Image 1 (cartoon, rainbow, N blue to C red):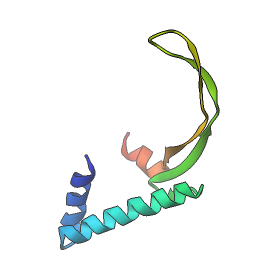
Image 2: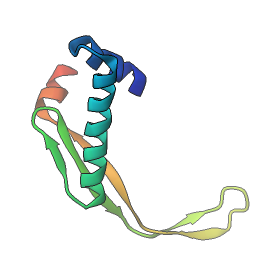
Image 3: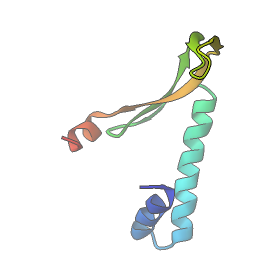
Length: 89
């Protein structure tokens, strides 16, 4: 399922596709804004979006085999909630 499919599913519940698109975009924007600020977003039963720190590490260039330094960075993480995990059993 991609973003357009998600909008179509939400539009089945709402009356207009335009309203569904606005709702999906606002939810994604709110999650992105919260993660940018370092906050976690918890949707009870669904899961938690949070930011994790990756440490700097050494790696190898696959073409030359030369050792390189990989910089540390912040990455998004998702941990599924209990209801979502049980729905997938």
